[in-house]
Image (tube, rainbow, N blue to C red; front, side, top):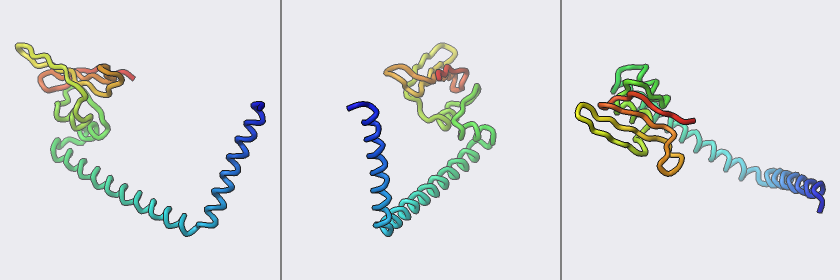
Length: 139
């Protein structure tokens, strides 16, 4: 079979399926309305729940840090120098892995996020004495 005719057959199949779906919808409009309405109601309920949960999380962060700039950064999954470990966990969650090095005067950790391959991470954040001091982020 030539490529042109197989493309035409594919187009005819797609058009036929669209016509059949339209016809079925017309014949079963009550079912379509019930299913569609139910799906819309479920979506609205889930959206409302998510919004309430987000508002509660925002209030918790404002009560905890009392700094709008810090809270906005956390809500936008940002990180910065001087950020505490607790703020980093609130912003990005727990790391996928941590490498720790304890020295005489300091504790240095590499917090690893977004594993791209086994043992390779897109984001590595250096935490020294419980504060972010730098990072390496690959796109």
